[in-house]
Image (cartoon, rainbow, N blue to C red):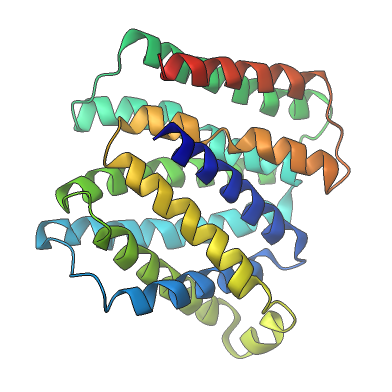
Length: 275
């Protein structure tokens, strides 16, 4: 399970870095969503519909995912990748752990709970380093915080939904098909007649970004059906460390002491979660 979630983290940070490179992030995310649907729709013919009991979860998750995409695009438009991505992803492990305990009755073992807290501490160091260095873009921080809360929301909803559906492949396929279509329809409403011109030149993201995004979330949904949501969320959000490296290598952002400390803390947290 750990290997699957860590692979998901790397894939997630990679497709987000690709989206951030595009001048209009919503256009990039729309193309990635189109790629997800292109991969998922043919698979609808090979898997049964999810258990009807999971349909309310699918509907709720679809709405939250589309909201998440709009907020993520706004975050990337307002702020730097190295600032907004850690905030957007770093909030969810702790929020998911608390919500899963209250709503789903999940209880982590002491070592795993300590691991979640250590991972969160590492993410806080990563975010705090950028804040102290002068990157105080309040609108970007607000947008990224709202994005992080939406991440926590769909993590809990999908964690419950995939279990109600029986933990099979059908829930991820139907969800990712719906999310991709929802993203394209949302972009069409936002850009109206300008959508073709906005998307021009971004078609390469359909196969590349779509495949990365599809594989990333399919892996994490598989893990959520088999492990505690808080632990899975903490492992997945190690993607912020990958994002810190990508920020330094791809975007020329400084990889300073705070990012080194954050990386060490996240690594320690992963070990604790898996004791």
